[in-house]
Length: 204
Image (tube, rainbow, N blue to C red; front, top):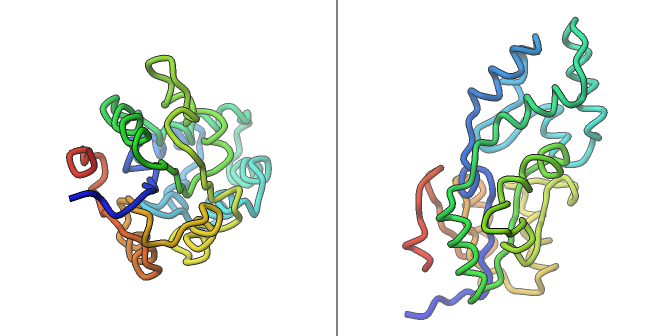
């Protein structure tokens, strides 16, 4: 049966990118910062990290908030590298899945993310087969640029408005049940996937 959607909206972390929270915690401990676990959630961040992801504070303000909590001197790069330790890789098969889907559908990213990661390590993870991140997606919806984050209903409404579609025309894929439920309530078709699993057989 032919799918009844024209657009596929992908979450990023956990769905496409493999994450390792413990790597990040360890990297910050090595900088004598022991409180990152208080803001680094499984599906949604908290505190000043959530403010960073919603664009309410700048990367500079976020880094300064960390420096105020430690006695040693650390550079911006050291902080960013510790933060980016959260990101592991993207399986090659998922990148190739995106390319195949893009031949038939509009492929979109909707991510709770931040300027630090999205302008440093995240683009590097997409560089394979001579391609870059923009080759895999038709449009990006990023929490820090939009000033809001999932599971807020407003972010899903904005996505539909900017794509000029009814929610029913899109399939939203996420590993967070809270995000899936919020999208479903607005009429989006949804697919909940377990983190770090291969689900390409359900789409191709």
